[in-house]
Image (cartoon, rainbow, N blue to C red; front, side, top):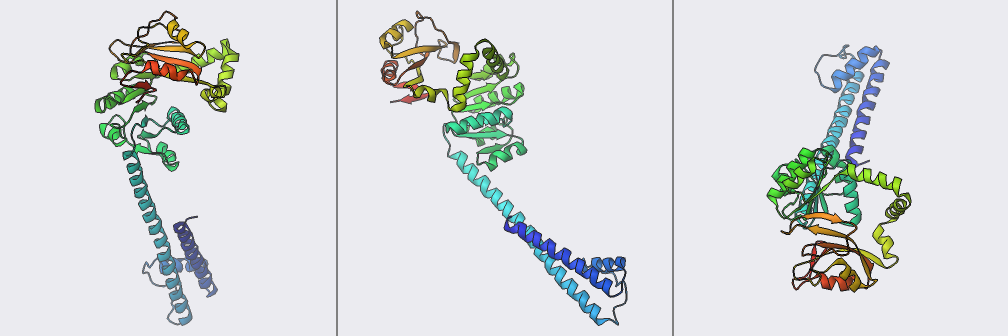
Length: 359
């Protein structure tokens, strides 16, 4: 129990004990229970009514009444002091916490903004925390943000469709914004607002209705995730390929698939081909043949000719697929073989590796 809480509890205890003792005292003087209780009430709260019974001939009872007034007044002041202290400390701590949180957000760069701290938002934040990725939560429901704030997470209370709210969350310095509200229309508005304030931010949007995917992409979303579609695909995989899916699920539950691969010396990396790369114009077969048994291309992200967002993901790319600048290779390989592929993928301007340019 905090010190203000102890003060309040002690004050209440003294007031109740004094009032009870006073009622018993008046009753012992020959008054009825009702008259005794009434006398205590008008005495303690200073209402100003006259005594229930004449005390002019009973100096001892007058002294008793004076003692009741002094003790109850002192206890009351003690109780009020505890209440004021609790309110003051709570407000100061709240203001200091807000100040520290604001300073923490102002120092962030290349962070992620999570719009919506509902069921999906909480899961996403847990994953980001586990991965060590800095993030800020934006929500307009204070009751949802309270647990996150108590856990030490950075939060912004406000409407994510309002520019000022996203600016307070550091959208100008953020790398990614994920809008995961269950309302597709709000996700569209948040995407429009974010892209309007910071065109460089990468937007990942949640969609409940498949028809909303095109609207979100036209609004500026780089990726659109449909949880229902993912869930249905997972269930279908468990039905059609139970052994493989159980293996993946088991790996994720114990640590992460990457950790499992690392134990046998394998890594899964992504390389984006820049103009001038040695791999531009080559076929997948030639790339894999040059790597021998060192790596395997498991997926190919095809990008638009103008360098825009990826148009499609080929999970079983054909060997005669010709690579172009902007394509991204998802490669599974041994540690020793991947640096060779990395050198071929980069240009004199540097290689893009998982969104980060190396020198």
